[in-house]
Length: 440
Image (cartoon, rainbow, N blue to C red; front, side, top):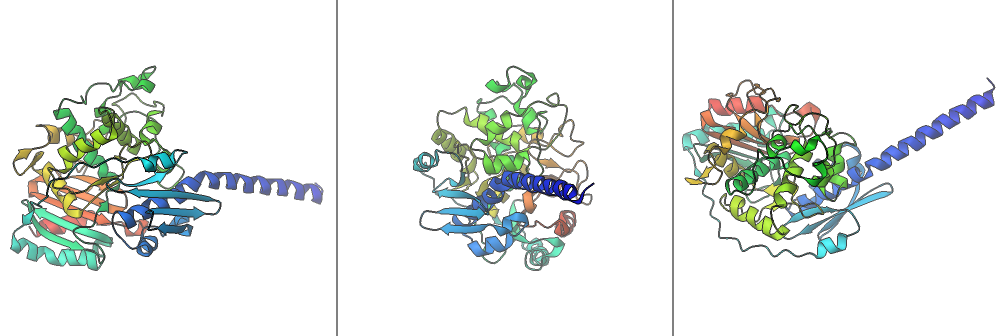
């Protein structure tokens, strides 16, 4: 073959590779810029954290670390730029941050939802046994201050027999700092569903009747199928690429609708696969039971958050106005702890029933195809993922190490919040819980 022809072929291959790479990179742009804009805005305007600290810790990975971020403190927005792309996220009082997508951004920001007047809140958590607190103090200090157990937590709270026996925070974080749930928000969506079921607003065993599903096998999907991650809908939850979950969170204006439009791959109720899309379908369905966003948010605040003494929660919405039930809740470490205690107390708070009778039992019943690892928007220890922890432990698990552990046999709730992203720094949750239990 002649040298010129070889060079021509090589040049064509190189050009095709460059063009293909640019096309793929362009498809990643909403994720690269959207992740930075949304998370930086929430950290600054909801959590009250320093922007430089967030960029150095939370956003210092992959392409995200190359974003150029501009924080507009007057208008409470963050714009993140990478190469030719940019994304903007905006904060609204009482609702938190939304990643702005679509042509109706101005109309979205001009909407005003007058928040319901909140009652005066009194934190009903009391100090626990001082002897237990003394024994747990070295563990709390080592975990938070010295990064023991491979952790880099922002907040650490332990309840034993309903009392606070350990509580520690990273510098710059405190008891009033609202922190991101990531997928622990799914468990709050579980609780909201339970309350609505108890009020007769939804039936978890009935097909949902979603219009887009009526012409095929999706018509059989129930709330129970979605909550147990057994809807059978096609989904990709891989966080490291251009996956469904990344596109949903960083590109879509109506996240629940995006998941609804996925085709059916398995018969509902027969195949387990973890899906943030399933939770956003559930939240969108729950929202549809009310006449307006305001009515839905008021119900959520009055029936779920107020009994838990959670003041000014931020369950951040997408552009459609629906809270992102899979991922975007901001409350304090003590708020998360009270939520865990409510489940430990069979859905009751200070003797008052919040969740319907039998709801917690349903929650911790293993999904049929999960091999004992998953209930209804809660993870289970029936498969001994934490081998040194009692089998009855169940938990709310969130991306980057957010955890609420509930251990009924030990009357124990453990809350861990923060940022632990490195594959070589996976938190030793089993070892941490084992050491805590040994000191009770």
